[in-house]
Amino acid sequence: MTALPNHVRLADTGEAADLAAFLVRLVRWDKSAVVRLQAAGLALAVFGQPPFGGVLAVRTGALAEPCDFDVTVSAGQLLDGIDESAAVAAVPPGVTGPSWAGVLPPRGGWRRVAELDAEQLRQAAARVIAEFRARTEALESDKRTRGELDALAAEIWARPLGDTALPLRAVHAAHALGFLRPVRVSAGVAGGAPAEGPALFASGPWLRLGTAYGSAVVRRASGLGLTVSPV
Image (cartoon, rainbow, N blue to C red; front, side):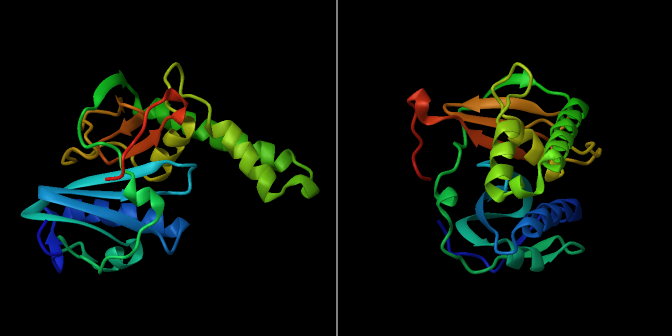
């Protein structure tokens, strides 16, 4: 692994804008959010964790110049260092990352298990969000506690998407992160999914909702007897 560069050059302004949009959403939920950056050749992967019950968000992009590094940094500092017009991102100094940053999904070994429809995914996310709001509003004020709301969210977003094993919390996260928006003509591959539409992938205990803009990844219960090693 080479020394940490001061900056990276993204392939074009669209890549820079998409990376900035991803970071804006993460920082909006958590001003102290961190992301793990992995660069290899002309590919850059950005891992973050939005507050959606163990969902890992992955945004991949293309670089204009080859790099090779792996570092966890402040999402806010990375966002502040993006010059969209120049397609350049300053790389902040590394920080001590949270536990999730040391346990990432595998790079390879993914098998495609289902084709998915973006509009149906958006509708599924809208339904569960509406249900959560309605059931929250129906609670008596003295029962509208953090514990009660967390339990309600866990119940709703643990449900599977249709006949798949993908929990709805991954769909919710993908929708909230902008991964389910319509694909523009110039959109490249992000998170390993084809630009033509979202799909469900599996690798060991991991499930990945991959789209042209990024992926929402979850790890299935350890009761399957499968393990994962820190990366």
